Image (tube, rainbow, N blue to C red; front, top):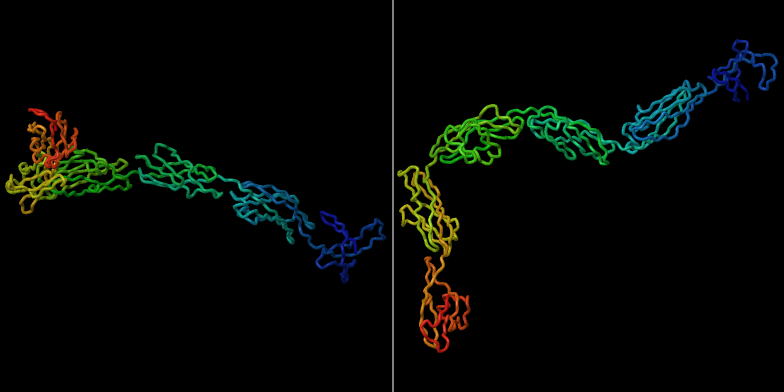
Length: 582
């Protein structure tokens, strides 16, 4: 054991150490040199020794001891402990203080670093070291919107202090508590042709860092005059106004499932300028003596923006024939027919009677799109009227007949043929609209070319509709159909006349059908029954042996069987003795 005094620029250390001495060969100097462990610090002891020893006793003389080498070894640097820390999401923590030191070099020569072992929660860039000398600080900034729930738990922060030989590590935990975040809405971009509705799903680039579901909360036009707007949970629907072009700005916000609202984002919809629609010339074919409605398919409509057809404008009237709108003759150009009226068949072309030709007539027209623009130039619609064999002209007829009375009607009396006497025609078919109303047939009693014979069904009355066909004898026969309306009269009540019969005193009389003088103004009607309206005053009327009552009815068959009998009262007699009414 020995005691050594060590000199250092900053410290004086007195300690008891174990010295391992080894004599060295003479080095040629005055004082011998001794060494401790190989590579140890050399202590120059070639000067005089201290004047006193450790007890303070004066030394005798000033002998030289010589040189010794003492291996101190390298002590690791020190760092104070840092307690585990907690902070809220998106909140910087610190500065946190700690101290460092080193036995040999002091804190000034130490290197301090810090490392995050979970950079998803605490990025390396979020660690800032400060201070100097022995007093140091560390400041921690977690990643934006990161927390220990979503990002793998607490993060270990490791501080390292090195003196160039030895390194000391010190760890502590940082826990980041989650804090509810607002959803984030980002701007969107869309485009649409003029006056064309566009539906935009805006949530694709929006987010909620907490993982909550989001929906659209509000949407509004920055300029409400630019169109109409609607939205649901995921999309915004915008319809530009008719004359709107360019950028349309729509503000919108989103809401998460916890009710938190986002910032306001902007959806920009670029609305293209409207291009005029186009129309293509075309041809419409129709048979002679028929009419044809002009429809959208005839117009060759097209629109580069995809806008719907809105209307047709008549730029010139047909060169032949006539044009009708909603049943009225069109007499001047400029008529505008909207899409609904055109689809309803309200615009109709009619050639002149018996006229035909491949290019019989033309008219000029323009088309309009749903934005309001007309085609830049007119198109031509050509009418090809196909010649047809002329058919007889069957003119409708009316007739009347009493109930149950057949009628024969000469329906050809008012019919004709466009080709006159060169062509003959005749009735070739008849049919009842309601076959239950009677029978119909062709009769030749009135006209050798045929007439219509109708026999009503029993007791049928009212209007009867009969269709008849007239066909000519041309090389290619042509036919037309006419309508015969027969009014069958209603049933007329029958009548009878007073009748007188003679009955023997205390006898009886069986009433017969001949006694009631039945008459009916309607042909074909026959006696069916008798009703008692008033009983006799001085006798008795019986039906099948039972006293008759007012209102009793007896059929013709029972009357013929002798069921109705009159008996005068006993001993009664005289002319006009009694009567009953029926």
